[in-house]
Image 1 (spheres, helix red, strand yellow):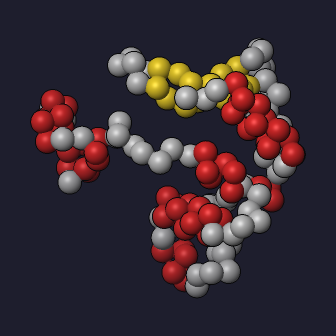
Image 2 (cartoon, helix red, strand yellow):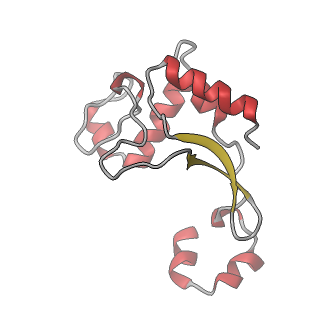
Length: 138
């Protein structure tokens, strides 16, 4: 649960890196089943032309098709990895760097993912009655 103290700490960390998010804050939400979800909520009206969050490029973990490969992997191998695999590798690299500007953010990411279908029991999956999703999970 995101306490007021943790939200303030996140805000200080983000502002220290030059991240701008003046009209949103971290919060804990609940889904339709009462499970807690981490998210952001508006603190004031945001117009359609406004940026919700602005992150300096030096703090962004960028994985774009055809983008530059990091120095720890060959370019040919990097280009063959799907975007989500590239992001996972960048996260691992950042975790291992003691001076990473995003280490605090990475540390705040969830450690467990009980609510996703990959972690459901066979009985729970059977309740879905949706074969296309079941094939993706297998």
